[in-house]
Length: 177
Figure 1 (cartoon, rainbow, N blue to C red):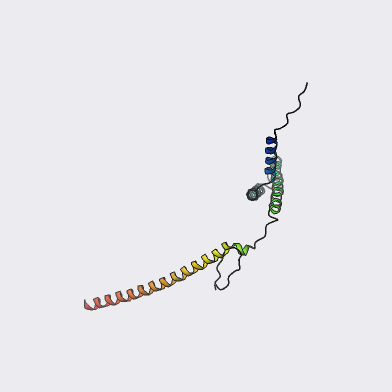
Figure 2: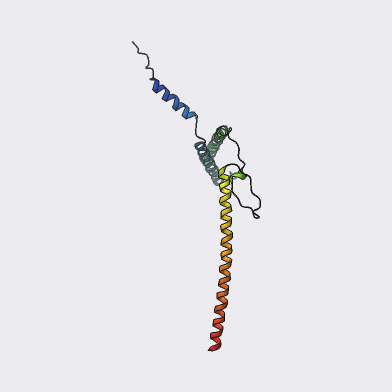
């Protein structure tokens, strides 16, 4: 006698479906982190390949050990294979990120990076309250910097006057003695 397999409870079946859905929907930020780690692995593998190539001796008639050469050649081929796998993984991550971000409105990078021009006459048109507040903050900083320059100029003039006064006092004291 065999018993039929137990059917999962309705709540358990729903939980399994949610876990499967969560496994399929990966956060774009975590994908970017995975992509960054993959790029770091690619750089590391590439550095190891160059290290192997630098240490590998050419069979130019000098003491040539075929076993050592074959071992290094095997390591080199393994690194190249892993590098190929990492590039494929990076391509998959890139494609998934592009797919996740396909519905978003692209924002030009010039609008994301705040900058101050030399003449200060041109203002970039930006949408949203946050961009306006950033331009207001930038204007306030410019005003504070201008006031600071004026105060520094006044302090310099006062210091020059004091220096001249001290010079005259010292000159008079020198004439007296």
